Image (tube, rainbow, N blue to C red; front, side):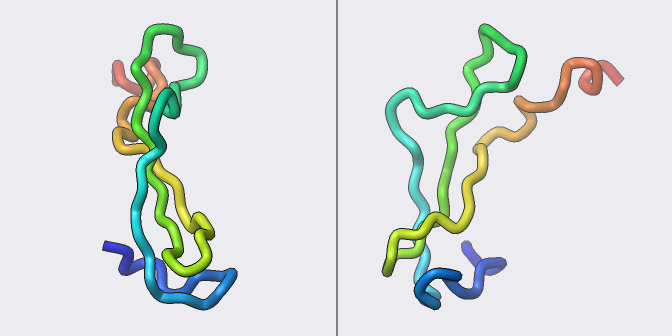
Length: 70
């Protein structure tokens, strides 16, 4: 699951978990008004709480319109 992350840079732990931002915390594509955006997930060190990585669940929503038409 977190194979690419070997060590927490803050506490040197090797134990990680994953979480999802709740509520209205969705990342919206820049310049859009009606997009639903995408859920944000985070990889978290379970020892110290440091967030090592954040990513969107649906990255295809961020492809600029002019690139989608190609």
